[in-house]
Amino acid sequence: MEVTTLMVPHQVQRTGVRRGLLEDLVLKILYLQGEMSLLELSDRTCLSLGVIDEIFQFFRKEQLVEVKRMVAGSHVIVATAQGKQRAAELLTVSQYTGPAPISLADYTMRVGMQSVQQVALKPADISRAYYQMVLDQEMLTRLGTALVSGTSMFLHGPSGTGKTSIASTIPAVYNDNVWIPHAIVVDNQIVSVFDPGVHFQSSVELSVESDNRWVLCRRPCVLAGGELSPEMLDLQFNSISKFFTAPLQMKANNGVLILDDFGRQRMRPDELLNRWMTPLDRRVDFFTLPGGRKFEVPFDLFIVFSTNLDPTQLADEAFLRRIPNKIAVEYATPEQFLEIFRRECQMRLIAYDEGVAEYLMQCIKDMKQSLCQCHPRDLINQIFWAARYAGVEPHITRKTVEQACKAHFLPVAKRYGMTA
Image 1 (cartoon, rainbow, N blue to C red):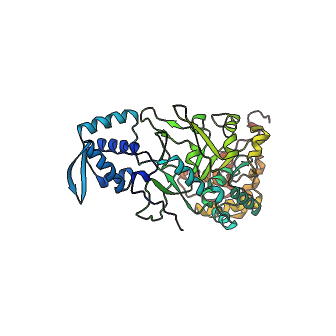
Image 2: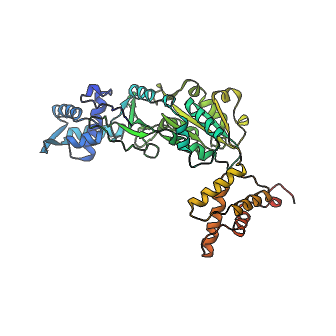
Image 3: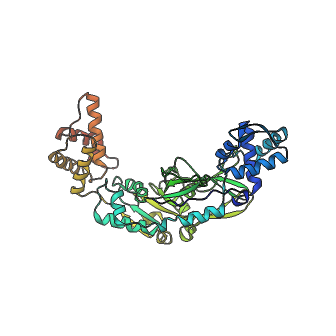
């Protein structure tokens, strides 16, 4: 797959970042490391040797560093007493010593160039991503149509029907890579963006002339559940390190953000919806720095609201209008249930018996349960646990599936709020 190389700047003025900020960053790193070659400083800051040499020449002129020796043609330097004092002062302001940031303008431009709304998706992409799931053609078509929009969708339906699995598979539809910056700078404040828990580096080999302040990654996917709070949607300031971390939606830019079990978060649905009313409409988000300066960043992501609650009870008409795709995920048909059960048996290396599978469906119906897509996995788990406890090999039989149902489901007559 062809990748557009982001050419490395060889002069400070071409980095798009204020010279003083880069000088401060390099001096802090040198102070903490004690002794480094210019090549090591280049690797650590993700700046070119040309930029590092420019900064080194300034440091030497200002007597902030001294040369200890030469190694493989590269100066090895340490901070002078004056340089150490300056670095210690800088660390009280910000302890950020990671890769050099990029400018907000460069970030905004790059996000726009690799927008989720510009990805060319075809039916084959949807089929490839969802080949392991048992979905009918209508569902695949609706998912494809929603993803082509590059906007957002509601996945709604009963619990256990596979909504989370459908949502989590969306990133696999995209068969490309995007550039993610290690950090950006806004009004001298550094915001860390790259998160190894969200951004998975591509295996594509890059040119030696690539700007290492950017990381080539698969399109990101951020999953947020009941732990979501209002603070997670704003810049996260660490009072100890004194720099910011990007919020969830910013880390998900050019990718997917999944709000699982929507309506059960720590923040009220209306609070979340009001927070994102403008971003969903204009595709930009707004943040405020401690000094009061407000700035905007792209809101370029495909958002999935996944819920087993009634969407009309979670959001008003104005907000629902801004979620253009609503997809109901219903219980499995008998044919789908049998196929899911067969595939689960195949994956678990256990013999599949269609007669026993049909008997299992009858057991589920006798217990007044619907055919959920999650039941084959959950009930086979019960069979494996029981076999392991008994010290025998697991087998799918009428007896074992019946025992699994009794262990997994609450008896109808004993459910809370019901009488026999």
